[in-house]
Image 1: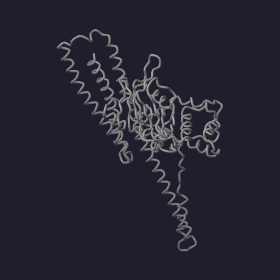
Image 2: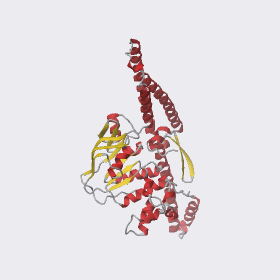
Image 3: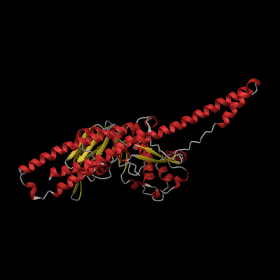
Length: 433
C-alpha cells in the first residue's frame, strides 16, 4: 500500500483496486491501472446508455402504435423486448476527491521574495550559509536537497517563523502569503475547537452555509464538521488547513511537504488546484510525481551552496543527473558516501597504485561501461512496455497471451535490472577503493 505515484509505477506489476463495491485486479503499473479503470467505467456507462436508449425507443414505438390495430401486435412485442432489458445499477465510486481552490485577491509585485546572504545555525550546526534567492511573480519554485540541509528552515525564515542569524529577507510589494508547515498541526492552538468553529473563526462575515460549503469541498460534511481538531487524522488536518489558506486568498503559496499525509486522491486534487493557481508557488516536497507536475524552477541546496535551475524537474535532471527524489539513487549515493567516510582515515588510500592495480582499474571501468549500457537498455525496454500498457484501449485490443508475455518480459527485466544495479554498485565500490 502506498500513496507515491512514482513508487507504484516503478514497483507494481498488478493493482488490486477496491472500488464500486467490488475488488478488481488490473495488470500493469499504477499509470496503466488508472487508464484501464477509466476505460472500463466508460464502457459500462456506454452500455447502460445504449440500453436506456433501446428502452426509450421501444416505449416510444409502443406508445405511438398500440392503439392502431395493424401495429398493436408489434407494439406489444416492443413492450416485451423492453421488459427483458436489464439495466445493472452502476455503484458509486468510493473514491472521494476534495476540491482545492486557491484564488489570489490581487497579484503581487514582480518580485515576490528576495533573500540576500542569509545565514542560519542552530548551535554549532550551520544549516544555511550565504543563501541568495530572488523569486519572481508566477514562479513555481521547488526547493530540493538532502534531509537536514535547511530547506524547511529557509521557508520558515521566509514567512517570519524563524529569524536569520544574518542577511536579509524581503517579501515583495502586495505579497500575501499562504503557509503550509511541515508540522501543520501547530495551526490548531485551540484544542477545544471543532472543524466548523476553527474554519469559521477565519471566515469573518460569512454565513454558516458558506463555511459549510468550504468544508464540503475538502470532504467534511454532516457530523464530521463537529469533530474536535486534535482528533483529526493527518490527511483530514491537511485538508482543513488548505481550506483555511484559501480563505485568505494569498498570491504566494509557501508549502512544506504538503503531500506527506494526503492519500492519492487528495494529492491529485491538490496538484489540480495548484496548477489552476495563477500566483507564485514555493514548495518543498519529496514526492517526485508532485514536483515533476508543478515545478517550473528548481533550487538545489547543497553543502557547497545553492544551484538555481530555470526549468522543470525533468530538465534539472537532464542538466545535473542528481535525483534527490529518487529513492534508489539516494540509497546508492548514501552507500557511496558511507564507504568514502570509512576509507577517510585509511593509510592505504595514500599509496601510489601499482601497475597491477592500474590494470584492474581499467578492467573494472570497461565492465562498468558494459553494465551501464545493459542497465540503460533494460530501463528503456521497461519504459516501452509501460508505455504500451498506458495506451488507450491496449488491454481491450491485445490478446491475453500477449499481455501475459509482455508482463513476464517486464518481470524478468526488472529482476535483471536489480542484479545489474547490484553489480554496478560493486564495481563503483572497487573503483573507489
